[in-house]
Image 1 (tube, rainbow, N blue to C red):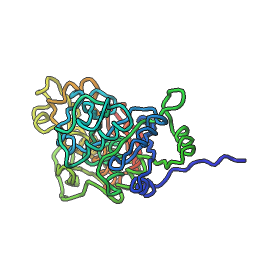
Image 2: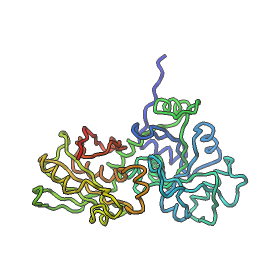
Image 3: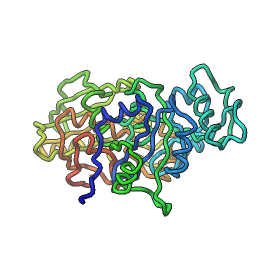
Length: 365
């Protein structure tokens, strides 16, 4: 008898799971962790759910929170430099101040989670350290960062529940991390729905975007000719980002693309304020390259944090495409699908498939 292969569920099905208090699994990009997490809306958590995660998931049981809630609880980041590969925002571990014993039992961890997300509770109702590990989601969800933390909160929000979730990595019996084929078998065995973060990104791009075009004009330069200029607004944090376009952009053709983060004060002095040229590829140089190609797009992303406070972190990890989601939405809106990417970095850009974008080739600049 032929084995029935588990198919990925739709995002609508996953949202319905959350709404009905059912555990589900989300798997991320194969170029990222390519791992699956058990996910359950924190608002509905019970000791049985915690016990299931501990027994069958085997990974670290964490609590995904919004940045707003983490500030209410005054949760400090575990390490302000955050040198983790995927910029995972762990805070110090927590415990409910009342109603728990040692804190590690399924009932105690459930109580801690309930306390942490209760809007009538605050910083005085929890203590540190503890046995629950909060993770702070990036504002904008998976359209800002393609992580399980953001995905879990997106699903809870779409289900009309408290924007928080309990998540736990899934490990195989031998202690290795469960990949997609393993996850399909796991979900089939436990009768769970499985979906991908890539599909959630695609769903949100179409139905719940965070970036919109607010202004357009013509731009003339004496060094690279004429361009079309567009301003986009990130509706989450109200920051403005820009696109400079030459030629007609079509979905079927390869498009020369440069996405550049800009820290306005530092770039004003050509990177000298932090002791070296962090952003050696200037906007002007990218525009000249695009003009020579007769067609292309330069996306200018406003850096979301101070270049000075992030200096040590960036030197250790290398420059990351932190605002990839904003840039990807802008590129998609402009009609870009196949990219000839101007970059000197070999780092993979995670989650592009969800935006219907593909890097055909990388070109040094």
